Length: 80
Image 1 (tube, rainbow, N blue to C red):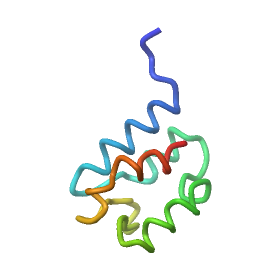
Image 2 (image 1 turned 120 degrees about the vertical axis):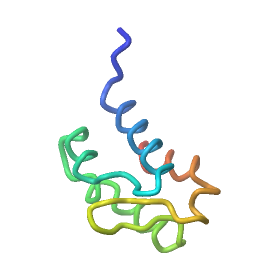
Image 3 (image 1 turned 135 degrees about the vertical axis):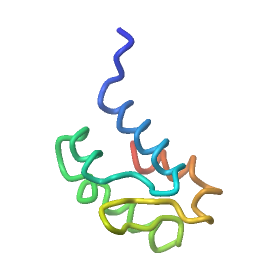
Image 4 (image 1 turned 90 degrees about the vertical axis):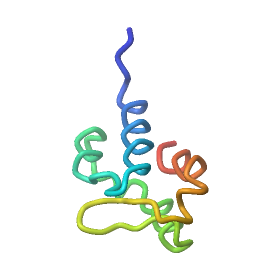
């Protein structure tokens, strides 16, 4: 079928969201995932926050200017 499974949908939501100014709404990802995204991917998220590539604030995860340059690698880590 042409339906995306949840993993593909998760990846697409994060990929598209991180390319926007606002970022990805965490509650939207949680609905797709059926569990708390930030808890499940805490190690990867913390790594990129500490590197200055991601920011988590006001219920959103967004890429910084530096993060946008390495976004493809980040997206792999945040969805695999």
